[in-house]
Every structure is written in structure tokens, then in C-alpha cells.
Length: 239
Ligand SMILES: NC(=O)c1ccc[n+]([C@@H]2O[C@H](COP(=O)([O-])OP(=O)(O)OC[C@H]3O[C@@H](n4cnc5c(N)ncnc54)[C@H](OP(=O)(O)O)[C@@H]3O)[C@@H](O)[C@H]2O)c1
Image 1 (cartoon, rainbow, N blue to C red):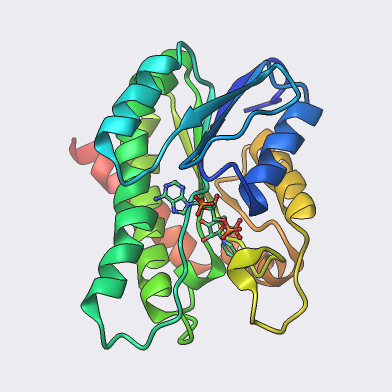
Image 2: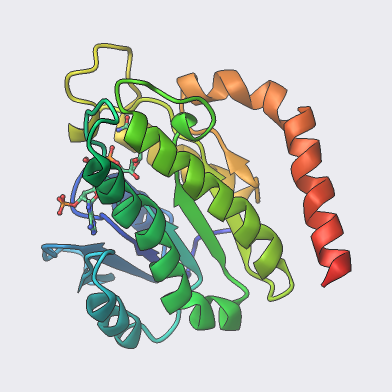
């Protein structure tokens, strides 16, 4: 995606935290239309923002949201939950999967026809915990690892349709989600800027903050990344 200028963008979980910063950044970069998906949508003073009622666990709301959008260049799956747990209650794992994995998958499915028409892009806001579990939030970490695997497979599966799929491997950011964790945190605004910079440079995996950047240099030339490409090439040639 060479530039966001004049593009139509949909952001889930757009009402606060990183999602809200992504809305402002998209507007600042000249997006033509920003669909701001939220469980409780808010009006925005900029007329380019269209609020959408969008609980990513609700198939009917997703269907209605997709009907309300006529063209889409970029989908950012940002909505997420993180609950402190110790893996003793399976329902906590299920709550994470409902939003962070199945929600992302459902929203991709619903908007894929529009993204295919536009030869557009999908960015999934994941976490460094997709790569390394944080045992204060183990269920969250499992769901983000699963969502990263989803992202890698979608990248291969959708390439033939001209849709690019990007992983955002975010470190710790100063939002409601990280309240209670005492570590240096990036601002949501700086993370939103880095996400759009990464998309405009067409980076497959985006590391949008200092904690994440520490992984980036080794990641791009790592055996794991090489294996991802090797397996994707094999799958493509076998289809
Ligand atoms: N903050 C961090 O340190 C950090 C680090 C790595 C990755 N991330 C990822 O970044 C993304 C945004 O997180 P954040 O830090 O901005 O957290 P946040 O401030 O807690 O915001 C979470 C957003 O997700 C929305 N959401 C939750 N469940 C939803 C559902 N079922 N349907 C639609 N929206 C839903 C929330 O909406 P409501 O207001 O309705 O609850 C809210 O808008 C998440 O995917 C998170 O995993 C964050």
C-alpha cells in the first residue's frame, strides 16, 4: 500500500486506545473515508469518519457493517481483549479466542470481497506475545499466537487475490489494556504512526514501538521467517 491518501480504511476497536489513535492518524494522512468500528460507536467531528456498530463477536453486526461499506482498501483488525489469568479457567481462554482470533477471522471473511475488488490490505494488530508468551496473561498470549498463525496463512492464501496481509507485532503501549503493568510504554499515537509507516512501506511484519523493534532486526533474517516463506511457497505450488 504505497499511501493511505484517498483510501478507505476500516478500524475495529476504534473508540479508544490504539484504535482511536489509528483513526486520527488515518485522517492526518488524508484517508478519503475512515470507518470507525466500535461496540458503542461515537460521532466524530471530521465528516470523513463513518461510525459503525461492530462487535467482532457478533456475526449479525458484522454482516450489517459489511453492507454499510461500499468500498474498502484497508482493514485494520485492532479490537482485542486481555484478561489477567492463570489458565485455570477455560472460559477465559474462550473469551480471548472469541475476540482476538475468531473475531478477526469473521471480520476478514465479511470484508474480503471489497478488499479483493480494491486489491487492498489487511493489518492485524497482534502482539510481541504472539512470539513470546507473557505468563501474566497466558490466555491472551495463546490467542495472539493463534492470530499470528492465522495472519501468516491468510498472507499466503490471499496473495493470489492481490490482498496483502500484515502482522503488527506490538510491544507494550500506554492504554487501558496495559494499566497495572509497570514498564516503559509507547504512546498509542507513536504506534499508530509506525503502523501506517510500515503499511506504506509494505512491510509484512510491522514492529511499531521500541520493545517490538528490539526483535525486528533479527526477525527478518531469522530461520523462522525463512521457514514461513518456504512453507508458503510450497503451499502455493501445491494448490
Ligand atoms: N496496550 C498494549 O500494551 C498492547 C500491546 C500489544 C498489542 N496490543 C493490541 O492492540 C489492540 C488494541 O489494544 P489497546 O491497547 O488499544 O487496548 P484498549 O484500550 O483496551 O482497547 C481495546 C479495544 O478493543 C475493543 N474491543 C474489545 N472487545 C471487542 C469486541 N468484542 N468487539 C469490538 N471491539 C472490541 C474495545 O472496545 P470497548 O471500548 O467496547 O471495550 C477497545 O476499543 C489489541 O488487539 C491489543 O491486543 C496492545
